[in-house]
Length: 71
Image (cartoon, rainbow, N blue to C red; front, side):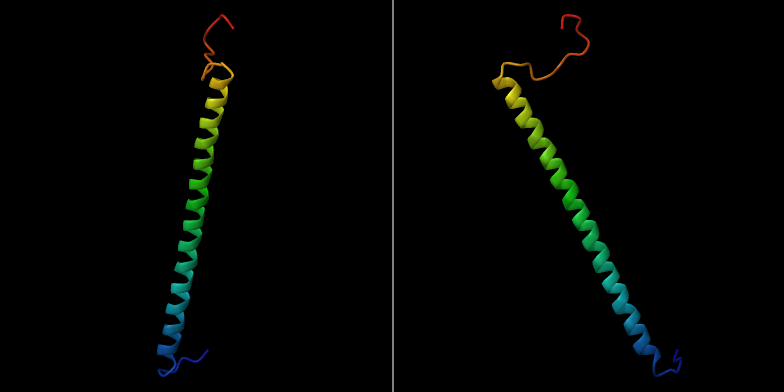
């Protein structure tokens, strides 16, 4: 490892570039994870709405009352 004063700025520049690359990758991973979670939530909301509409079209109640004794 060259520790001469002339090589220090180059080493620091390389470290800065690596840090910037790391943070870009980290930010990308966080963004893609957030996007996946948002898509999962959107899917669950749409699925719930479609299930509710299907229940209504079949004449079923939109919910099941588990506390009622007259099932």
